[in-house]
Image 1 (cartoon, rainbow, N blue to C red):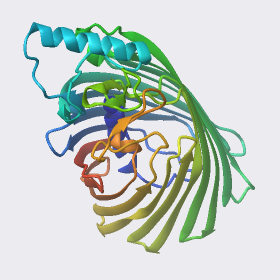
Image 2: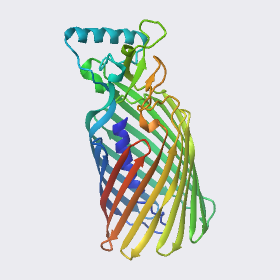
Image 3: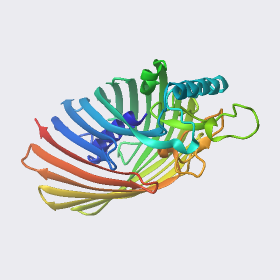
Image 4: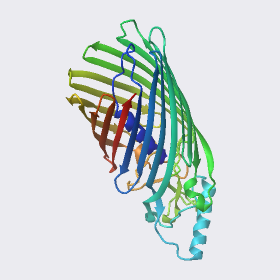
Length: 416
């Protein structure tokens, strides 16, 4: 779902802009409150989104830490989807199109009632307006036992006009020995979501239905301190999704042989729903390292591999550089390169023949296509006083299939 993806991306920016190492367990972390605003914009007058987050962390001695977060997001703009361009020339033409659409729907339930064009070349990817807001909240409680192993439990909730999400997560961090140079983590998360499918076509008679989505993730991690200057983490992860995994904002073209003559005429191509499998199994590996070149320069390279049973696989490599210019000023430039193979049921909308068969899975969502990306970012942190810190981040992202976006983050953290 395009809206949720955008808002999730914004939340991820906030996390990536922090990137600090954990404090030693024997040092009491400072209680603090943070406020951040994030702005996201796609090039080409597409989606624009804003995310406002307030978070607070409170420590109760050395053993307990409580964190909580509230978010308010807005998203507006246009979502690209196939649509007709040939105008309707009178009532009879409208009736003929409705009758043809009904015949196509008798062949496959994926065909929608909106937007039939009697000419194959009449379909063009168009921008359809969208606007929504999301309210979100989360809380996490961490306990440290006598061995200073950590046990965490979290809850989260989010709500949009046509999307609801409720989740629970937990993590255990266990040190290998008293020296605490090595640790193991086991984490899991469950999300129980609902999406109001077919909303885009409600004015044309399609029913609105709440559809369930269940998302489960498991992570196994190993962290190792090799020297006083070198630290690394290795994480294996796996995910399982089930339920309505299609994107009801998107459409595809389907060929329906209405006269059963073995050929597809120009007037036998219809708009249909984006249709994906109702299950997705994925997994991969994430390697993150931290190397202190000097007391003022830290290098943080990263590699990530992902694969799923839809045919998508990806590699990401890059990193960030922390540079302390002054006692109160730190710069964090970063770059990541990413490459991805397409899902088995993807056809690029710019292909010579972008249409699908009458039945089967089908998507023209460019995010499930074959592409490479470049992501550039620059962060800055200013320690204004002993208790107050300001930070900002600006980023630019481009894909080889023509997609571009930019975002920026500003915020402040106050210790109390």
